Image 1 (spheres, rainbow, N blue to C red):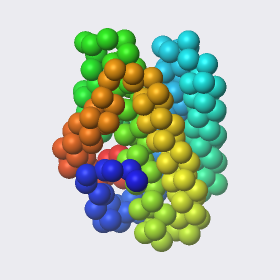
Image 2 (tube, one colour; image 1 turned 90 degrees about the vertical axis):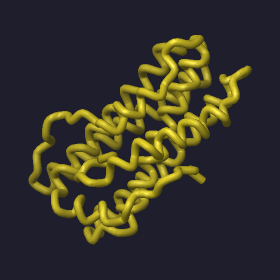
Image 3 (tube, rainbow, N blue to C red; image 1 turned 180 degrees about the vertical axis):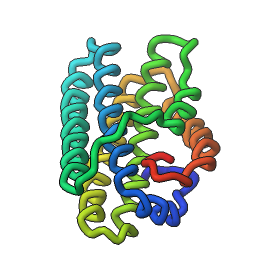
Image 4 (cartoon, rainbow, N blue to C red; image 1 turned 90 degrees about the horizontal axis):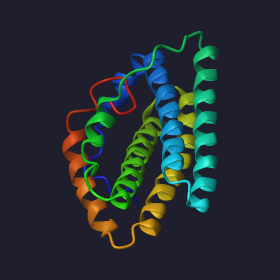
Length: 193
């Protein structure tokens, strides 16, 4: 369904299990950034009422996920660490067309967002299937389903508002680009790391 070219090496879960506090902190900040991204898209494209309505719900859900991860952090006696840069997202951002039309930039931002959700969904699936911690296994299974919904929301809007743009071709190009980027990740206790 997600169409990702390169699957995460399942051994990544072993790295995650060595530092649960770090993965939870990184995850919390990923959720915060996802909410901020949705609000940014709304701000730049507020003329699309359906997009505003759906992305407001998505942003609220991302903030709820941030809260859920923070509750897990507190429950386990950890503290929410400082925000981290997400090198994967920074590299993926380079793909976006910033010199073209407003519409092309809009579609690229939607596809960029869909890709991050797709990769997060794939990582959550691996965590849900392989992590030994049963509470985290269930937690990540539930979030995997949510991320899949976010992925389809962004892809759907890219197709809806990408009139005159070959959205499927652009998505295929992004999938290829992401496959090159993700080869350098899966070596740290970070959602995209």
